[in-house]
Amino acid sequence: MSLTAIPLVAGSLSTVIFVASFLPMLVKAARTRDLSSYSPGNLVLVNVANVVHSIYVYSLPIGPIWVLHSAYLTAGALMSVWYVRFRRTSSTEEP
Image 1: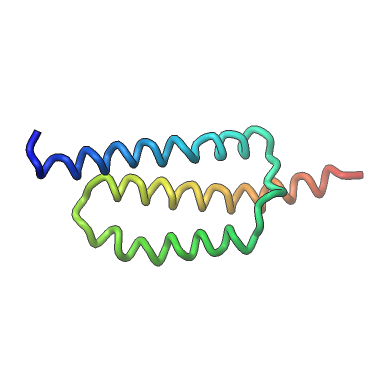
Image 2: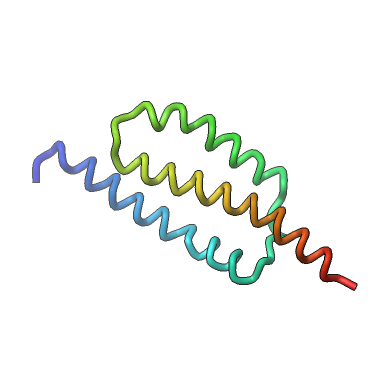
């Protein structure tokens, strides 16, 4: 393996590990619809930071960082949408 391939392999491996680390959170949120432990302020900040960081990430050559950042964008957006959607659903189901 050449020295130039090592960063690509490391980036790819870390991307897989990071994505695998937050997939259980997304699965649990989708399954239970319980996002009461999430702060709306935090979800807003995560999404704003992701959008701003996109300017930097997508100016880089295509690589593992694009995949990782796209996963972060998707996760942040999903959690925000689910927070609003499931909150409405649970508030209308209460007596």
